[in-house]
Image (cartoon, rainbow, N blue to C red; front, top):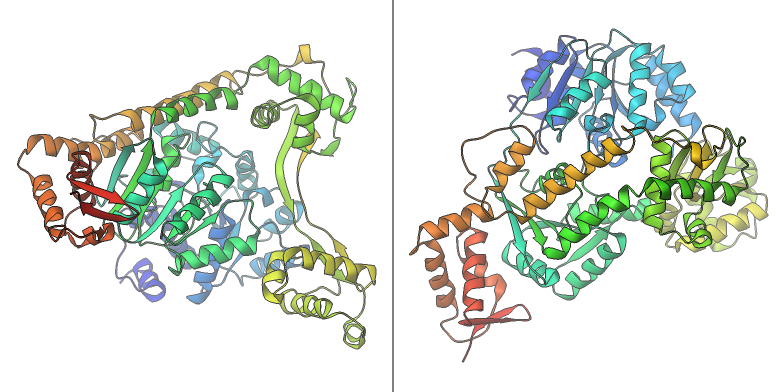
Amino acid sequence: MDKYREILRRYWGYDDFRGIQREIIDSIGSGKDTLGLMPTGGGKSVTFQVPALAADGVCIVVTPLIALMKDQVMNLKRRGISSAAIYSGLSRTEIITILENCVFGAVRILYISPERLSSQIFQTKLRHIKVSFFAIDEAHCISQWGYDFRPSYLKISDIRRLHPDVPVLALTATATPNVVDDIQEKLGFKERRVFRMSFERKNLAYVVRRTMDKQGELIHILECVEGCAIVYVRSRRRAKEIAVMLNENGQPATFYHAGLESAEKDKRQKDWQEDKVRVMVATNAFGMGIDKPDVRIVVHTDCPDSIEAYFQEAGRAGRDGNKGYAVMLYNDSDRNKLTKRISDTFPDKEYIKKVYEHLAYFYQVAAGTGYGMTFEFNIEKFCHNFKHFPIQADAALKILNRAGYIEYTDEQDNKARVMFTVSRDTLYRLENNSENEDKVIVTLLRNYGGLFSDYNFIDESLIAMQTGLKSHEVYLTLKLLAAKHIIKFIPRKKTPYIRYTQRRENTEHLMFPKEVYEERKRQFTERINAMIEYAATDDTCRSRMLLEYFGEHTDHDCDSCDVCMEHRKENNHGDATTVTQAEIMAILSDMKPHPITELNTIKRPYEQIDTALTYLINEEKIYRMDGMIFIGN
């Protein structure tokens, strides 16, 4: 058995690789820059974890997903593989310890967020680390033509210059042909080397359901399809509303978005992964790097901005290879909402100039001054003062950022920090502390090291969960401990920042290069139009449309999407749908109401049951109310 298969068998228990995993591993293992295109669930992590264990040195994995870092480090350590992660929230002491362990060879795989690449401490230590290869996850983020471009990814080229002979493995689940070329150029590939896995998901049925009653249709779908589910929504407010609505209708649900405390996110994610709740209602902040293969259905109640985003989110269904469904709820108002996102994301240039001018008024920055000045930015106050809508103002600031006039960091989360000002012995002799103060002190000591020598980032929501206190009670207790000079406490701040990267210009001199405005707007418009075309079509196989968008051509239909099912129904008049109607009527033949979930006993595809049920209800042969179905009198 060769070394790669032996590593796979020893640590993962599999006898052989699947798909294009082996080709990618052989390529990076031979020291060649490599790009791997693998759909969600294709097994990307194995393609860098296995060769990392076969090579000398440290594999450095760049990924923007902190949840994925933590999850994979935990899983690797459980398998006996030394690994670590560096991300925002770690103290300087913790970061130095991790990097020194890398220098001395005690870590085989190091995960790091792209924002940390340019830090002086990382670059200094990197010079002394023996690197086996760099692995770049979510590599489409480096392409300015990708749907999720992140400027921090451009810093990857800096670390390549420090280790010019070390190969790079780039991995992504979503890349059009243009993005494939751009990734290799941005990463400085010595030669083109791309391995593609088919994006076709034969076990996944894509469905677009046209409906004016999205909530009713969502309940109907969840009643008809058994198993774990994800429901994607557009806003944080909607996530909570839909979760409440589902619970009220007998579907155990929780919600997830970026505004939740990290401990609360972890708890909700764990409850869902352990099947304590069936449905996760979430914004697009949820899902990347979440390893739950038995998701049976993913429902989008709102259309994403791009096919890339939709394909990645929908692909979280059926990763175990069993039947899965990706359903989009759509109506004519969605087309208008999608089209409006173009003008919201790319407001007129005159409007952008006005925002720039108002920003100078807001901070009293005179023309010709301001270079290097940094300000906390309260977007609500700014918009109130100058009568702007937050969505358009935010978009204008991002364009000014890309044009190089400012640096706009939206909602940077600076966690709370704590350091003890008394010695450990003195701490244990303290009297007259309240019960809450003692609880918080004990929890701090249990969870965080080095508190007596340096500031440590802390998670107030985690302390709240472990002490049984509310978050505001933890905050007040920390303030009281600081007032007693037992600790130094720097409260958490979650606020955007504005930094002038050049002196303030007069608005008439502002220039927006074509690649910053016109070209980006064209690309965004094309993605929006592709999303509308996908949702609105009723005559082309949906799987074929998705594959062709990513440059993969096929000569066959999927035979499982809603379009294919409709064609099959039209071609078979006395077909399975009619038989399914008869089976439904047989269940109701006793003339009593039955739970709609009883239709799951019919051993036919969901689409057939759904089509038959819809037909019978429309023809008023049966009725549905409060989760029950029955034959009318």
